Image 1 (cartoon, one colour):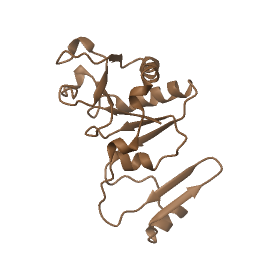
Image 2: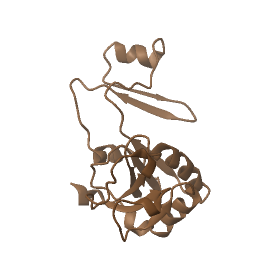
Image 3: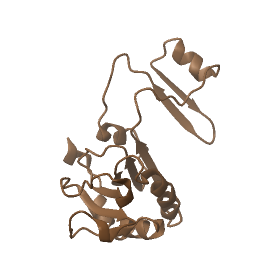
Image 4: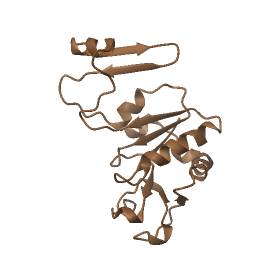
Length: 177
């Protein structure tokens, strides 16, 4: 499996780029999974649903499955900060690519998503794990770089760059433990 993180500040366009890169990878016959960091109070379940009622009753884990999908919900009894590597370990084995969003401090290879108009600083000058920069403003980068510059508004080009450089993204869990 290959793993790449898309990193950048809120409003930079990470999610938009990812939702366009995923189908571009799928068109190349690749299976893609996503690991996304969320705020502590998120919920994917809804009051009144059986799964919600089971969780409310005190179940530690609820797995719900149909012939088309599976969902696992786990309730932590106290705050738990799972690493991105622990989350990747939870994924299905047969995936080609894992795209990570929201773990900008991780030690994964990253494509930084940066827009000059966002008024946010760039991460690449201080983050050695940034391997490329997807931007709509290459001429306005705050520092010169030898890292590849990817066109933020061309998800097919980003997907092709990932595929062409796939060896850089091979995930070997032992490297991160």
